[in-house]
Image (tube, rainbow, N blue to C red; front, side, top):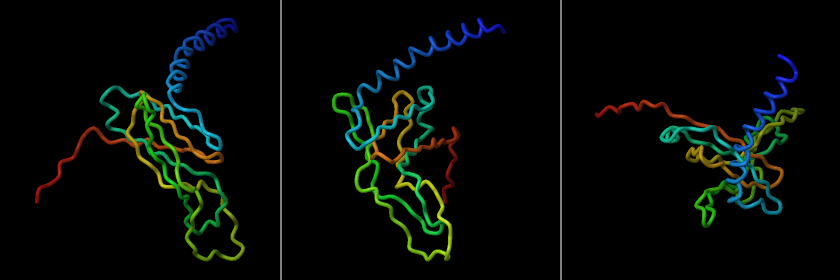
Length: 161
């Protein structure tokens, strides 16, 4: 394939994506900017057809990489709360409370090396909605991670006893 054809194909692809970028940006207009000391994270979920969303959930987790002793369980305080944008009805999520680290207190072996790991607070499961972005506000220095949970189409029957 010649270089000129490749350029045309790449340009065509970029131009075809522009409407999508505009649509994503216009949805974010409803969401407030991050307050001072906070960061805004946006998750765009893979598209699902109407009715498919009910078979999925999104788990949000807020945390950060920290050095731990590798023995004790460490987690963060605070919680993720759902809030609603007045006039729009859209949900967004914000971390509230102290994100101070808490740890169990088991003795560590002498000379044990520190281990870098992602330390998180309590996760929050929310309904899957591929039509709107998931917007999460967290204190600066923290990050948002997420997982998508799915349920099989077939429901099992319980046995009556």
